[in-house]
Image 1 (cartoon, rainbow, N blue to C red):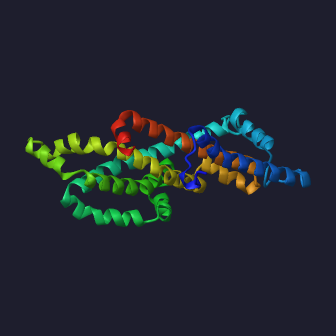
Image 2 (image 1 turned 120 degrees about the vertical axis):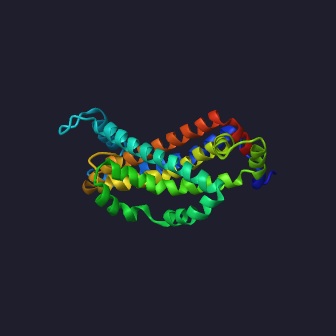
Length: 272
């Protein structure tokens, strides 16, 4: 009999085993919801799937009486624009700082300690400062995401740059390459797939800062809606919104992974 430690499931079994915990959670939730609603039909803690479907249908397909917008889609668009803007700025900043500090020893000696200190500052702690300096508009929310994500990306790119064999730099200089040419022709192509990986890893943090900023100061967005309806214990809206955020995060991560595999297949081969 094969020992469990040596058992490797087939691709089909891997899919089934991966789905199993989700099916169990759904069944447990349905049993708990049915039990609570049978005792108290107006219970809000564990709404049925039908109640959640009705609530999301109203938000997604019935225009708001106050604004005339489809609230669900407007919240989604606003949050995605803020997230992509913040993470995009962080990626550009992280790439530049990471490359410079990773490739140039004098820059590393000067700014690496500062980068380390900045990365240790909890971004949520400076949120009031951002509101005071920048205001309560979109800029403060995007800035919070960028500040929260950029140090992580910069330090990761810095480490990845330092891992590039020095022999490549020596060969490039032997062939007459300038510092700028080394950055563009040698370092940048090897760092770009690592940048996409770093962005993927930082998306969870980006979502955290997005939800926090929207909860504190916003008039739309997924985080704003969740914290708006919590005062009414509207779990029929909160739970679908949380599930939607999770799905969006998964889709963005999947798209970035596919983009990385498409643009830099050699990087995927190196992982295998």
